Amino acid sequence: MASTLSYRPKPGEIPTNPGVYRFLDSDGRILYVGKAKNLRARLSNYFAPLHTLHERTRRMVTTAAKVEWTVVKTDIDSLQLEYTWIQEYSPPFNVRYKDDKSYPYMAVTLGDEAPRVIVTRNRRIKGAKYFGPYPKVWAVHDTIDQLIKVFPIRTCSDSSYKKAMTSGRPCFPGQIGRCGGPCSMKVTIEEHRAIVDDFVAFMSGSDKRFIKRLEARMREAAAAMDYESAAGYRDKLQALDAVLNRSALVLTEDTDADLFGVAEDELSAAVQHFIVRGGRVRGVRATTIDKELDISGPELIDQILQRAYGSALPDDIPRQVLVPSLPEDSAELEEWLHARRGKRVSLQVAQRGQKADLLRTATLNAQQALMLHKTRRTSDYTARTKALTDLQEALGLTEAPLRIECYDVSHLGGTNVVASMVVFEDGLPRKDQYRSFSVTETTDDTDSMYQVLTRRLAHIDRDEAAEEAVDPLAEGEVETSRKRPRFAYRPQLLLVDGGKPQVEAAARALRDAGHEEIALCGIAKRLEEVWLPGDDFPVILPRSSEALYLLQRLRDEAHRFAITHQRKKRKRDISTVLSEVPGLGSSRIRALLRHFGSVSALKQATPEQIQELPGIGPRLAASVHAHLATGTESDSSDG
Image 1 (cartoon, rainbow, N blue to C red):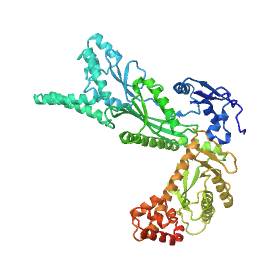
Image 2: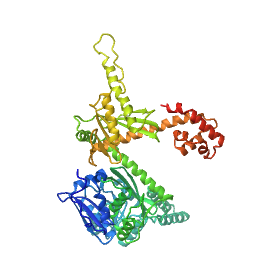
Image 3: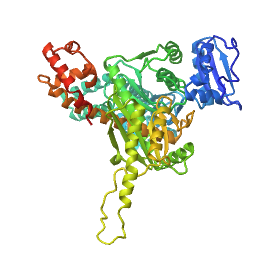
């Protein structure tokens, strides 16, 4: 592979102005669109030596056949042009929205002679005022059912309205009390318009005014002994309470803001968009994103905001937008939002207080959504079948790897070294066959991996030999309920967490054990690249590959299981070592470990360093130091 690209522009050809650039393939298809404040500085990053590029960036620039750019006057113009081109061309290497579904909204058709309230997914009704989005259609209908008890506005269709106004007879919904428009023959057009205005004002956040008005009227009716009217006002208050209880007050009543919670890994991201109006969460949008290139969190936020507001109506853009981190061009984004809204928009990171708490809630929801998205893909039968087939093709296997074992090594500063083995069969976890290992003496992670696999592979021959020793045709009683040995199942594929060094260590263990027939690969977390033994370059699975999702989940599960075992081992060390020190209670043990990080690090500390902790005097510090010094041998053999 050449170290440079043939289509690289000559020095000085790329301008230093702001602009938008695009990479194209040999057929003229746009692969990637990006913007830059300085085109020369940004594009020079793509034309660095290929071996220094992120693996996925390298795949994009080597797929491309040329690069073009367009100079613009301002950074705002580049932002707008980037958004326009991404929407028009859907470049495969830009972030892609997996579940960009349309959400149901409540809309009030203010452009009509007699406005009506409807449930719709169409965001382009002329003159309509929208509220939402809502997670489900039934939630919108339920809200409307409650509100028309207080604000009886029109709900019938346009054809029913015209027929009623022409004939002078109420529309059918009006006859059964489901429509309060002029077509019900109960109000005039002007009176109905006033009720519609109140409906819109309530939904826009001015809820206290109506509640206070109804409470006052209820008290007046009760004082005048007009209990029937008082009961009617009470029912209306209950209806308003039912609506408000669905969107609890989370911020101050004058707060209009959008909050974006984001959770991401190397390939995907989940976004939870909380829409807060009048201090209440009025709507939530959930989106899952596929990432192709290695983009940072702030760059992803930039793309998310462009997507959220690029085609938004001015009323949909709030006064304040809260994000986990500010993009590099946050000032330009503020100006862009200002221009779209017609009023000032503040783009901020929530640092503390109620807004920060709500942003953490949005982020937690995003984390759960990302986990659910990946789990559903892995647990789906069709997706699992495709994952195993794709994995077979990518690794050049003779059969699909129905049983995969994944190994990960975990330690704390070189101490408490443990390893995990997780098992997936037919693409699903077999938690009853998970195993953990303690590694007492090792030089590094590769040596730990070699030791663990050697110990595991030794059981294959041993357990299979034990099974062969049972002759089902022999005379006498044959035990039929005997459990299969725990390591007897031979895997079709071993997966290790790591890159080339870890894979080579695992390959050496397979050779030494005489089991080179078992396939092997490793997955490196930083670049999500798949390494095979003996290869100088990794296998790059497509971003949307089901096989890559399966390998990711195996790796993440092995890492989780290893960390869990490692923490348990640390707790055993605490009980067997530090608890034996006279005068050292559980609270001081926790303080020591928080300060030094581990028992091993504490062993290296001097009495003076131990004494620096509050509550530990010279005598106790000397006692801790002496006890750890004498207990080194027994502690190192733990596990």
